Length: 187
Image (cartoon, rainbow, N blue to C red; front, side, top):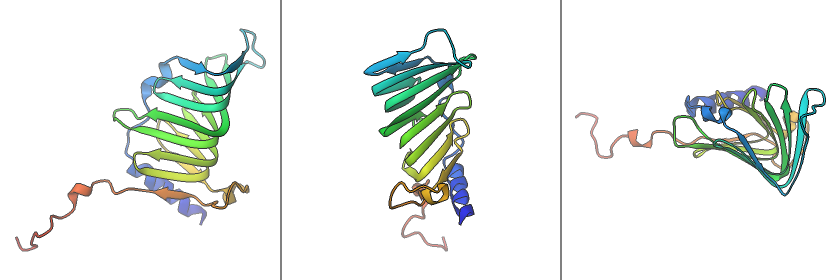
């Protein structure tokens, strides 16, 4: 049973293609909007600068957009940022590189690491690309390779709702290649 969701996740990753998250986003500035903010100055504790944003928070970096009730943003001495976003429903959205399509996600908590370009969704997590969708209690998503791992709440040992299994919806990709009706096999 454990291996079945890994197979489905691998299948989903294969089907979604080789396009990745918008590569230029990493080099763009981070913009934050919130009702309140506490921002540390240049002094850094343990090599990290911590800022806390609360109330209708919007974090934007290029095409990446995260909305939450609260965001704790940590910045290391190299300038890499790590954000933990929480709320009744945290959302993220990012354009895929080279195509006019977005990856979208929803959960109760989102952790974003811009050093490794990884985003993790916790509790009632949902990830969508086009019409394909995956749901679980936890989703780890690598924004560069578009590889993800999905775990249900039973697997994590937590109960977050009545439906604790991993769910994946994969849409047919090339509907126009179906045989033409009325065509004969002898032609």
